[in-house]
Length: 155
Image (cartoon, rainbow, N blue to C red; front, side, top):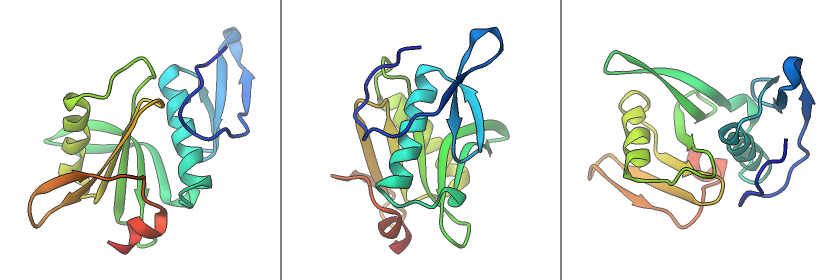
């Protein structure tokens, strides 16, 4: 299966063909192969970027983390945790053909009702939008870069 080039550094992609000729990609956080879809392609690039470039320990990440928001079950694409287990960042991934919109921002912000994170990263693999949340002023500001694990942990 040919996937679109993304605006992330290249990484050593591990894929295999499963039953029914379905292509799967290896997820280093969940430590298993998952169906390769356009959104999963973006998610795996984001995971590898966070690990290799932003120095997030894989053991402090959760993928498709289930949370409850207003009694509803939701799944966050990626959550980065501190060494103490506190959520630091939520990452919302969309397929490359899906635009990042106010709805995407609102979706990630709703996850924050349960997580109380300091950073949100929204990406479709082509465009990335990172926000820092300020609880004192109840505001958010777009950052000019994706913070490293050390930067996330310092707040």
